[in-house]
Image: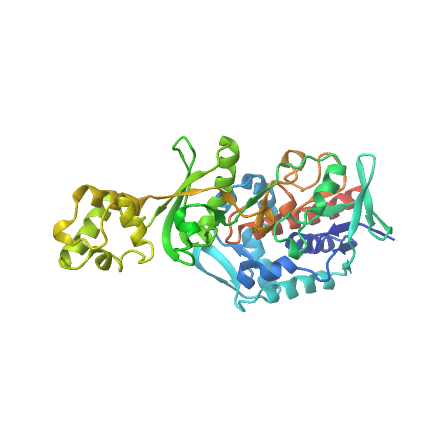
Length: 423
């Protein structure tokens, strides 16, 4: 049996590819190796599914540091505003939360998955689950279909690879598509974890004395060995038994990975700013005023309402200030050092958790070999890519799923239109 378009992978980009291709008149087959579709969607956004982000286009692309500019042409066809309209057209009411994140009013990812899969079915797409693909078939410089693991072949002059990266493998993202892309002559840029917790062997990490401590509205920075700030992100974080996690940490993680590799060093420095809205002099005056307001009280008790009680002993020790000192005996220079530590507490980090434990895969199919207007391979006619298999990655907050939906729509629409042109 043959189809106009075969889509491999039932994640967000694959489902959207099916919808776009079928809506533009193609006879579509969706193949997935798992037992159900939309597994990664079902756990995204903490189980609530952050379907996109409402930021303006340039700001949206700025939050996709991994080749986001490649998406301008795709966004011209199917933008984040179109994604919002699409879901509302399916009857899913959305709400905007902090930082532009868009969620279903139901707060349930299942709502999104059911609606997407329902739309795919309503368009007459044939669906095969439990059907792992062995290889994509090529005939010269054209795609010819796919061969399944059981040996059956399905012919098609358009194949869309939407198999994801290597992150969160229990959802089916195990990197299968990279080998099929390479078989077609494509380059796979180096894969690495992004949006991933960071590891450290600092004494206060190894002792687990800060494990579980959450800090809100802080700023984290990553520095290269030459003292240049690579990135700065504000938000929340948490200390873990192995290092650091939380939204601000995840956003910094790819810069940790790149700096360690580029400079071939065992650690790089991150700094934690506990008072991002104040300068060091202002922190000095503020903390001193707290002590002055209660001059007979020990410093550790004065400051615990302004600074985490668990972090405070480490800060005081680094600054060389005794915990039981009172206002009259505060040493001026160490107190300035304390203020500077509150603005830039150093943490040496030595890496991240594995790519399988990351939220997003960095690297993938080289964008030099993909047409940004169609997502079609420049090397193989009829071969399309979309989603995380491409060398595109964004921060958490609805940016990666937006890239998946827009590249998926573009690939599906382009695949269907290419067939119509050839008929």
